[in-house]
Amino acid sequence: MEVESMEEEAAALLQDPNHNNWELRPESPGLPAPAVPAPPSPDSPDTGYSCRKRCDTPPGKALLGISSNTSKFLMNVITVDDYRSTYWPKLDSAIDQLLTQSPGDYIPISYEQIYSCVYKCVCQQHSEQMYSDLMRKITSHLERVSQELQACPPAHYIERFNVALGQYMGALHSIVPLFIYMNKFYIETKLNRDLKDDLIKLFTDHVAEKHIYSLMPLLLEAQSTPFQITPSTMASIVKGLYTLRPEWIQLAPTLFSKFIPNILPPALESELQDYAARDQELQRELMQNGFTRGDQSRKRAGDELAYNGTSSCSSSQGYR
Image (cartoon, rainbow, N blue to C red; front, side, top):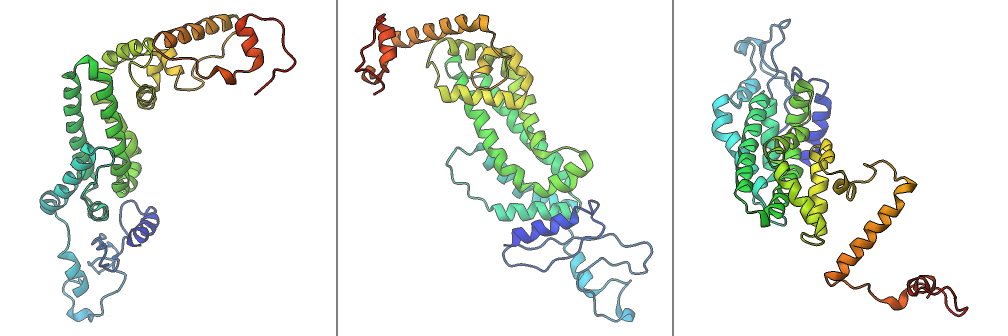
């Protein structure tokens, strides 16, 4: 597949982050190869660009040392205006759809086309501008999400936050791979960061951090009222907050410990009675809310005797 060959070439080009030795690749009907210029060598009289297939034109007929093949290549250079008018609008539209899609939605975009578009822009030295545009685009989206959450009534606040968090994290699963070349050749090599980490930080700064002190009291209230919100929603939000900023555990250690293992110190023997009392209280609350103990016919014999306060045991009873 053409995308695989692009990835193989990219792996070789990792040794050349400044793109000084990039070569042209043959065109493919499925995914056009980007036109990639390489700066001329100051030690060579040839002012043209590196090309896998050298020009056969006699030196005397070459104009300024630029072959006919290279001249044709130079006509395909992506200028700043080309990037602004053609390439970024395609990326902008695709990002919009990915950020606003619901789970299971069909997105009418060509991932291969967008992948190729990013590849070409990176090859033509537009990585810095593309990164800036991407961050600005997603920041603007997250600011709108934050405003919508502020206007949300408390009864729906937790669910709405969960939807916003899940929708954004789902979008990252598509956005990050589409910008893999920008991540490899610009963000990792020049900024010493990672695109996914940068995009997660955007949600933390522009949404979660602005709402954490409104969200946490509602989560604690929901925790004290069984099934006020579904356990899956509670788990999703708590795990999501931990991913965004682990130090938020300090806001509600007991709540986080129910969904994040090994974040609290080991229990002391002196605390076991307190844990048992809390479990009994939870069972009473569940029964008061209509939850029964289930089919008692499958209870172990020893448990049944203990429950009835009986000290004797029939030899005919056992595990069923």
